[in-house]
Length: 581
Image (cartoon, rainbow, N blue to C red; front, side):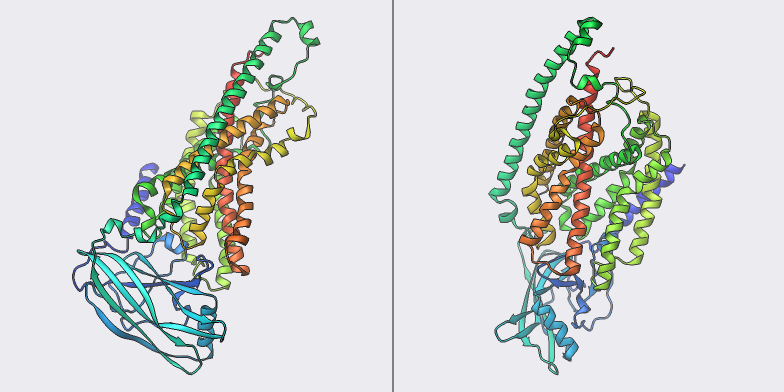
């Protein structure tokens, strides 16, 4: 009964998300077309945004509209749609028309001057299509600042659908106290041959995203995969074959010869290799979260490829939130079953940590940044109602689904089935060379995985922090798959070296050596910040490094989980093929 009610609730949420679309994108002649004023902010950082009317602009005379919708993802992204008050009707030209008259006082002049000096641009929407315009121009030599007072809209239509919009800011006016400025606009409708499904192509930048450097990076990463897979197949398989031959020869010796022999290698730790790692609760929770995040990333990329989610405002984040909530049973199943196999007893605590670890990490960072955004009166400030909505999703959707997954996982896959018995007393770990210590292996383990993705990181960072729309999700899927393969190969090699040094602490080492990729990604974000952006100030710096920490942390959990899972299969395989006395 509970599952049935939960399914109905999720369907209702999905239905609500479908109905929350702003338009059906079909208009009749003279039908209302809404111009939404969104945000304004510095060109150097597209993520630092403020409400459009935070500057002393003025709205048109029209007071009401027939529809308005805002989704949860728009609220989280700081999309503040405010009605412009402009009279725009489908296919009806509007000659130059006055919006309002603004008399400039010292405060208004200072506000506009600051915006022009810092290269502020504003963003608007018509029929879901973004429009950007520059607030004004500056003459640094004469220390004069001008503002554009006229907006000229050229709107292309094909049949009953809007397919193209161009904005031309015109009429520069010098900013000076006591001056009266008249804001105007005009609308020109033009037939277009652009098809509706292709109307977003003008916002894309094929010359940037499909540059030959991008293709070369994909080819380079692919060759790295071939090299690493060949390395693992040749060296490890040949080495393991020699190990098996040596261990078989040892088994044929009598006890006296075996005692006098020089035994060493990974077989010596067979009684401890499947020992439960320290902090098993945290470890299993991170593995469960990694399974879920990996599923979310693959699903969202596939949805973006199939449905072109980048063309609809907020659809990418909405899809990610829905998929994350829907995949909560995956988290519970794999995290709960692993914790049970490791002998964990407080499974309820483990389930709570597994369910809320990533949401608390994300929400804690976002809310900290939110306080700074509130201080700066930025549109990125998350409203209290949105915080409550996110909390409700965590408590009433994510938590119950995680409980279901945990119960199923503990009952179906919670029994230990290790190929070797675990000794009652841990075996002492012998001394080894410094470069075989787990700390060194962890630091070095992320170098090659980062090398396979760092060029793609540049394109992803540029699309998020600059005015580029990322649309090559086929590239992203390929690079993500390459990252997974490289991570597995590297962690298997690192774990083999560790076990061969008779160090059985492979669980955390395999996870952290793969997760260390995130350290290099975060370090690269510092380089990108100082050499590829023009950001400055507390708000921009906090916003940038806060969300880069979220991105790097999520990537680290994904890589760590993939590395551990691949290594776990490898370890079980090699120990199941050795006869243990």
